[in-house]
Image 1 (cartoon, one colour):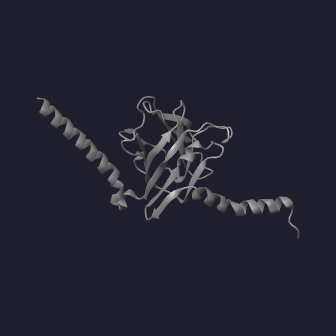
Image 2 (cartoon, helix red, strand yellow; image 1 turned 120 degrees about the horizontal axis):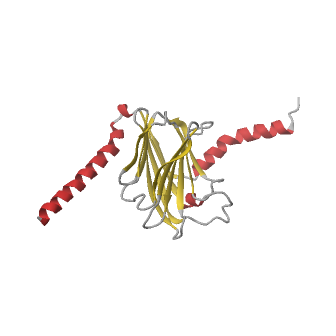
Image 3 (cartoon, one colour; image 1 turned 30 degrees about the vertical axis):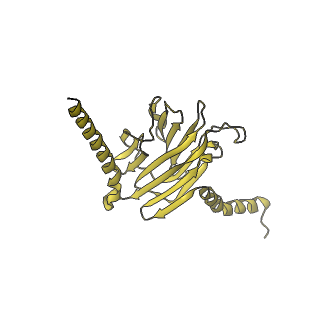
Length: 236
């Protein structure tokens, strides 16, 4: 029995899907995988991609129920209005749920946006800061816990805390900088540097590694407070 041309085409496309997904992940470098952690780094070209042809890093299997992602933006942005990086943390299809982080490259303002999309509520802007929005003083952290919900930092402080998403299985990270159009005609967002991602996942109760970010933040807070007290006493 002969297969129709349409059937042959469909089978061929299905066979290529794993290869295409692997090819997307191949664009990342410094990829490290170990028990409870996975990290990778992207070249600056990833933020010059178009939303119709973004970079996609896929986690197999999806990471749940709890995870912490740190993002270090070491990009050198083009000196123009609107230069940015868009990062989408997505659940596997057919879920419509995703978390969107947008970082603008302006040296002073560094506009910072955090949005969430769910089937129940649609697309919602949860945080919007036009001035001093994100910082390179520390990594941006995005974390989800099955009991605590979603928390997001801007590199210095928590901007979203314990937002209930009814669970979130991290299936992939999508990165781009331009909306629509063609990559060949889109304006560049960055011209050097890289952006790195480090994910810790699993059951927070089973590993002390998940308490490290909180301990670091507490230590930094204590150090700043100590310096302020010392400075005040010195001035007195």
